[in-house]
Length: 312
Figure 1 (tube, rainbow, N blue to C red):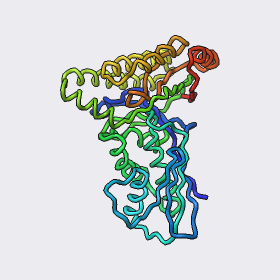
Figure 2: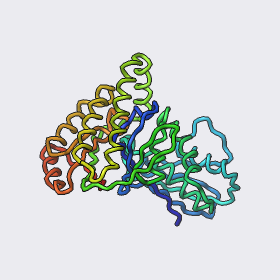
Figure 3: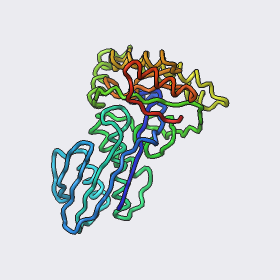
């Protein structure tokens, strides 16, 4: 059986500002994956089975539709761009552990896993930029005005400093710390939030330019910090907290997310913030590795148990 996979991602600093040309720092979450399996069929039927969505799509590669689902469009674009002659059918089965609409790059990861599986199935070698270009077409559906950071970090599977329209910079660092990803359970569509922020920026250009510049400065400072040896981990936490302040000023946090961040900091986190578009999704917290058990117990006392730990 053919299997393609891709990991989740988390933005440490810089969301929203990155859409407008400021830098952001993002890292892969390799323990959280989207997988696409391809099962050959004797019939000519092509079916996309998305188990996380509890949805199935019967795909006709000769059909032209005005309202493709992003999964259908990913497959259609691949067939069209590679000028494939489809002679037999297959099931394309998508299984993802990445929460949807939560700021972890679910849409990009699923697209990448599909493209990687299809490339194996049709025995096509793909360059990273080819995958990126294909995924960005789908990201425009999910995000409206995507920065491109999600597919970049997921394809590379390395920490990156990313500025829109510039080559990404790979960051080589290792910390004696854990990144805790706390799922708020509140689902939020990135495109809706990005569009809203864009509208607010047009209404109040000066204020939002100031906010994005401050967020960009945080990412630039964090990049420099991550290049130091030894890295002062407590300063990373301070940057997370500062970034959270400006995201609240931007209007993309919620009282529920603020409360999770506050509880995480009280439980011993070095810093915490929402990650992704906002209005829901995940909150991230940085903790010292030796405090992992204590932190988990303290959050559980406060009714927070949906945690994913990732070495950083």
